[in-house]
Image (tube, rainbow over all chains, first blue to last red; front, side, top):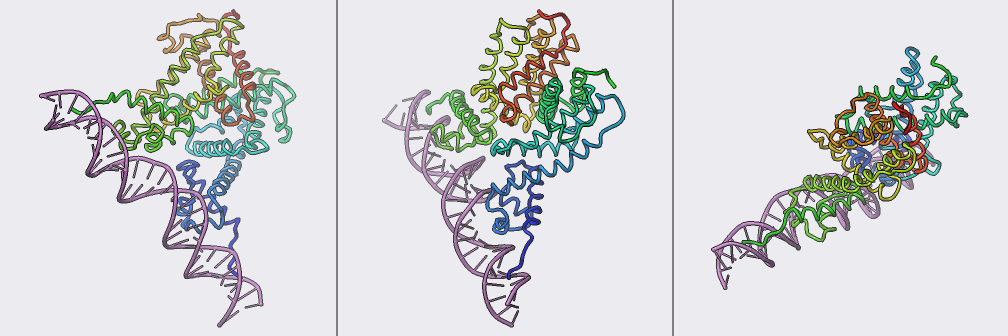
Length: 212
Length: 212
DNA sequence: ATCGTAATAACACGGCCGTGTCAGTTAAAG
DNA sequence: CTTTAACTGACACGGCCGTGTTATTACGAT
């Protein structure tokens, strides 16, 4: 019969282009015509793979999510083994801050995902949010003097110590604020200032057992 | 000669319409045609008062700034006199959080201003940022056990106690993060949760003198 | 080699946008 | 009342957008 095209492969290809546009112009820049042009196709052709703009943007957000997972998780898991506890945890938390060009790119992707989820709330709650909270929970647990490594699926659930749970939330919120200040008022909050503030907050986390 | 129109008054009138549009559709919704239509004039007429869209949006941002000053400052200054120190300070800080419809409106205006300043960085640094920092500085000073009221121009300058300065920055960042989480992930961070987290952070501020 | 359908691309329609032009209107100064 | 410049609004141009329609192409099964 007619020639067959690997739809999933084409969508992935177009998704990559869309992510590139998100980085350059934000989610609103992902238009049917724009993506088609940058990918080198006509809009009529693109619309065989995405019925409308909504589908295109939804797919782009999905690609962005996968990209972040692939980029950020390995960096977080490759934990630093030297330095004080605060220093090691700070290094992990800094992976969520737009301190350099690469992480600034990632922050733009985060923002696009958040913008999308705000306008199209996922029924089961944001997955990325749960992941982040689990990360901070684990950071605070270590900082408090608890076991340094818990099973991943354990970190997804609340920590038995309410103080850990509380400070995980505080840290999560603080890092979010720090990230937004870095991009929105770079003249007021530099990368160095942010790094310093982060460590100061980590110092304030109450310890169950003395520093290790 | 020809009839005369109070230009400043017209601009203010159009600015109000523009702010209404910012609340409804964001800064990008402030278009020459849109504002003219909502104000009941033609675009050609509007453009006697604003040469182009840039001028119109810049003016709208200015009006938004003035509106916020007029709305938020009085609420902050009418400080609560009952309850613990933490409770009183929390009430002040909560004025910066989008906890109800009114303050959610104000948050949208803040966001529009920040967006504008990010794309058109003011040379002298953001005025609104300095104002906010001064507020948190004063809050933390009281919380630490310092004098409850300093001269306004004193609050603009750094506090002599470095710890006050540090925790003012931490609190500022935290409240920013809390605000963004409330609007971006309302399903994860409710108004109640935010209020609770805020108080928890305030409890963690180190005291110079015992609670008063 | 032929056929039929997926794939492709060109085009049109309607919408919103910023901006420039220009003739008509208004009202204050003379 | 006449003059005159500010004011007004209608219109056009070009651009970008989403989307629907339609003709053409390409290719695998027959």
